[in-house]
Image 1 (tube, rainbow, N blue to C red):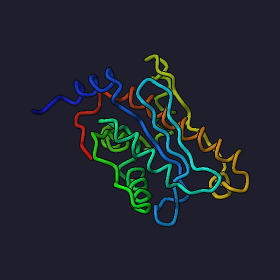
Image 2: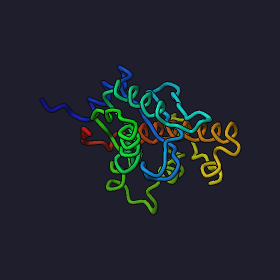
Image 3: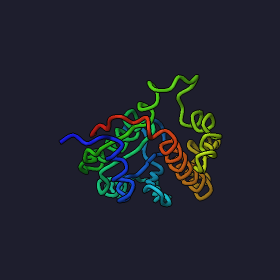
Image 4: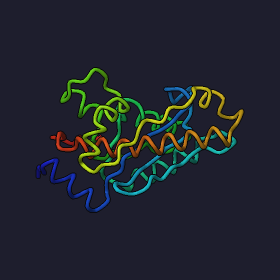
Length: 194
C-alpha cells in the first residue's frame, strides 16, 4: 500500500515517531576518525545529546545512538545519506556491532537541493535565508553555531570545555534542522527507506 508522504509525516509527527539527528566527529572518515557527539531530537521535544567520555572511545556512544535511532521509524537529517549514516555505521562495524536498521528517511539536503534555486545548499545558509519565513510561520529559527576548528582538533586538550561546545553545537544543529524541516516540509513528495 502506498501512503502519501504528507499524510505519513502528519502521522509520525503526531505520534512522536520522527527524529531529527546529527553528528559531530573527528574528521570525515570513520576509519581514521571517531564520533564525538550524536544529537537526536524527537519532533517537538528537546534533543537527546550523547558524547564520548574523556577516554575518547566512541564504542558506547555509537551503540547507544544506534539503539535510540532504531526505535524511531522516521529520520530527518541534513546530508545524513552522504555522511552521518555512513559514519555511524562505520564506527558500529569497527566495534563489532550491527549497523543501523533502515528507516524511512527525509534527507533535507537532497529534498531541497533540487527544489530550491539558492546560491548555497548548506543548512546554515537555508536557515538564514528562511529566517523571516520561519518567524512569520511561528517557528523559532536556530542559527548555526560557529566554533573554532581547534575545538575538534584539540578536543582532549581542554576536554570539558570543548565537549560542552560540541554538544551545544550538535544540539543546536538538530533544533535548526527541525525548524528547516517544518518550514519546507510541504516540499517533501517522497520518503525513501534507507
